[in-house]
Image (cartoon, rainbow, N blue to C red; front, top):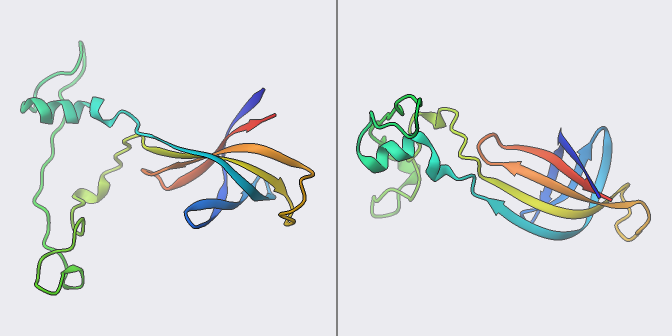
Length: 148
């Protein structure tokens, strides 16, 4: 049995994985990462992507939907600190246009962890299994599920 909790949590990571988290004022230490997966969020179904793929900014995705706004802007030049020795820009530097503009592509990283409150990593008493979720578009963590 599991319970759903879309509660925000603070997470400390070690080597890319959650190591500790704070949930409802209580400190939890991750004893083991049981699983990890990524949800892509089906970004390819967004109206703007459909309009871009069809080449028609006024194309409609479905009945009653408004035309997808297509905004384009030139990519600014890379700053000098982001250039390789021969002057070529480093990959992905300056590639963001319009500061992300609140785009939520739905990509989420998930971790299923065994954790317990307190700081003793060796103790198995009081442990539980938790699903932690990181949303790339917002940079926020939530504790999504507690498994019994």
